[in-house]
Image (cartoon, rainbow, N blue to C red):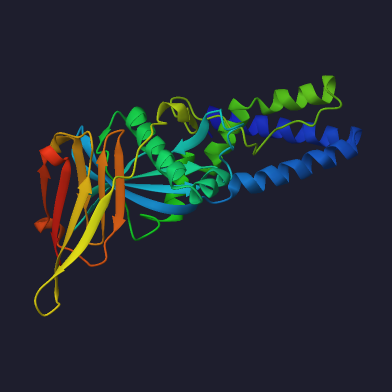
Length: 315
């Protein structure tokens, strides 16, 4: 057995001895302590719940498709108030290669209350998505495309894989070692039993588990960093048909006042939806009434009218 394993077992033994002392000297307090730990432990072990999956691109350091699994997780604390930072947890990237091509998956978790509020307000949802993308860029030194689309599936991969990436470990033995080491478990019990008789100790499986060195499990990004007023532009969508009333293509005209160059427009089209973004000015997401041929889609910008015309042949 390695020295580190022996040391861990010694700490565990001391931990149980101290719990035994607490149960003998103050049974009521011991009972309350165990009940609290069981409650916290249940929340600590709960699985994240996938909400939606986004598809975008990593532009640098190497261009690749990126899927972002956005989920709610009870382990993530809620923001203290509307003016405080919104906590979020970003898992490490995982690369995959399939017949259809290579891609990367990153998982991002928010407190359930945060995402529930976003379901009632598209503006809040957009901000949370932008926050997640901004955090990914900052943490992994990526440059992402500013456009994205919501996929038809809710999660890329499995919930178990998502949980492992968000927790940053696969080993419960390692988790226990980190808790004993980082949370100063033994010292907390000693302190509580000797000098803080009226305080219920917060130890083992707490919600404040410290991350491993060099790994940021919970990051706080101030929402004020990305609170930019983005407008939904005026648009007209038309399904063009032939003389037999057979649909041929979809024509979309978008008014973009103040924009004088198509280079400022970021367009993403799939078979079933479309997203157009102009940084910090406009954003328009549409579910298309017919399936289109994304590869044959064309866009034309009329500069003197600030009008973008997108033509999408049907699939």
